[in-house]
Image 1 (cartoon, one colour):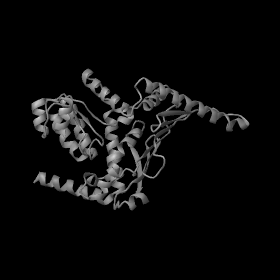
Image 2 (cartoon, helix red, strand yellow):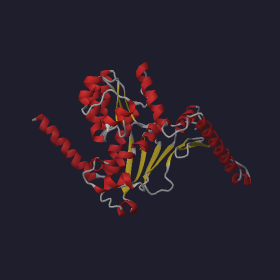
Image 3 (tube, helix red, strand yellow):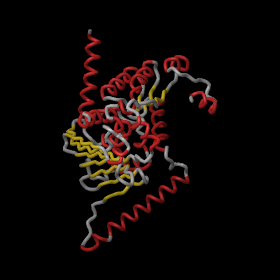
Image 4 (tube, helix red, strand yellow):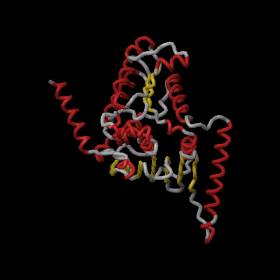
Length: 338
């Protein structure tokens, strides 16, 4: 496949070994898009060779691996980032503009992130469920771990470093009918940080239509970002007298929906509205941070916090798998000491 792609785009170098590629090509930046369990060793190898690293989601399998990679990048004077491209869509950037302008009326009080996943595409979920040796089945969080970090990453931008977390998961009837065995696909997570700001994360394969949204609740106003439709709704605290309560707010929402449609049409005609806009924006910002030696597009704090939250979620919903993984780590540490 690499050879075919090289011929198609006239790429001179094709390799089947990462070390050989790093030695022969000395790339400035390496994009790692392999299965998650290979992320840590490959990224470490690239950083040690002097290459900046763009690492697809999930960043690593564990928070410990994430911490080690970021420390290594800092030590080498290199940049590393994660492929959370949904953080850089047009509507997410508009949300940040509004938050920075003070629209919420203060610090966010509550944040909600919903992430939908459609099990109707059997071409992806079929092989996972059909083979216990599939690489997704060997992740601590299985199916959830491979796809949910996008949704969790939206929360950590507003969440404090110290938090309480409670996670609950179960298997949908749809997945059970497909032979899901121990794989879980319905997840609900509640978080609260030291400032008493709360957050909620919902991952679901059942909710229709698929949800991909973020809700920010402030002390004065709130925002709803709908990434499925590329829109931002402003929920403003404008009380209405008497029966106007039933007429004025719906009309204001209708006006906003029309405005969002107009903006999307204009962006489409200008070539700015396309499915990969977020990825293009993230990669451009990452390369700019390398050229100008500026901060990476996704703060390391957010990458680490996302990894920590995911670790805790999987420890709660898959306690037996978590215990087994910890035992393997302990065995390796004992062997290393001996």
